[in-house]
Length: 509
Image: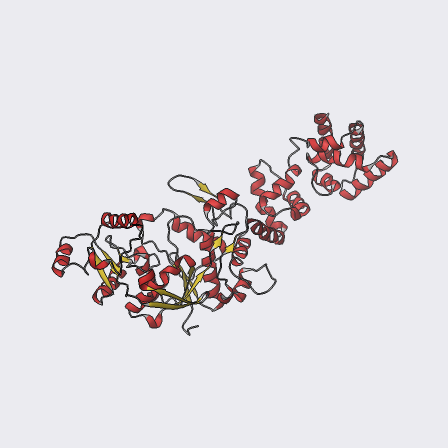
């Protein structure tokens, strides 16, 4: 590791909602920086104005905040290396594009998109792949092929052009990747002359990325493996610009795979299998379509981050639950795997269940109250608190509280027919009516007393507990579910318990 200060950046493009794979990239950058007392920088790479989506930048920032991944520098908080949106830095890049032209590392190309498309189609008809670069560039509409007088004439006429990188011929570009080891690319076999600067005055990703990483003194570039194919061009750009000595180290993270294990996880997989792939809910500004988010689906950020950390990274121990601080202490790029990691939606729920159980009853109460109000329920906080204590272990998400506890706040709207068919006998109604009368006589209304009086009553009548417990539960709950029956009675209160028995008998009979 180089001795300079650790500075890493998360550099998403605001072209839509931030995928969970992007959040993991941000997380690994954050953990690496914090472990080494370094800086975590957010940079918005918005050079492609055609793909810019309104609201996407704000969404990225809000997502990082929810996850607890707060940048040290970025568009909101600034910093000494700003601005941190590339669209605000566009005057910087032309200088370096011109430097590459002057040094012979780049050239001007006047080919129109239509001309390029025609060449591509002609190549496809021959079952070949068109590549603008070694072997073709000397014949095309560019400054390498045209006389200088013609180039100057086109420039004077303000003819649109791009600046392309001049890839050296038949060179093996080798670079050390902190995850994959030595990687080698041959310039002739696998690389073309990428566009560095566009006719609209904006740089492409490649030039802006390298220039900004250099000017922002980035020490390590930690990004997804989809950018591995760009590595040789970026390495050559550092050489061409005279920055080899300060070139960052590189690490390319493995893909997050579909639950089936084949292919990169996509939004369509989430739609098909019923889980979110975005941290927060996203509303498409064009279609108005809503896409699910982990936050809105009831996940805690700690669970989401913990789950993401273990997709592609192994702590080397049996430990599975980590706070962000704990992850910071134990994280290392050396333990990031090379191969893709399969996403398991059930494991994500499992993580959330763990963190749900760790939450205080007071916090869960405050989170549950808005859901109760949404369902038309106004309840005493002490009652809500008591209900959560009884049902918490059955839940993994805040909405589960309503599913498990709605009957504590609203009487049953229906009664489980299967249980009634199985448990309701000819004398069940008579027995429940007698039990209701007995409950009227209880003055001290708590679970222990109710159980004691109930047991004495049943024993005196010589009735089987099994004959009445499920029917009684059905009257109170509507389903054959819930905690201890006498605890339910205590929480409901004496009048409500007796009222529900009578209502149940009337509706079921």
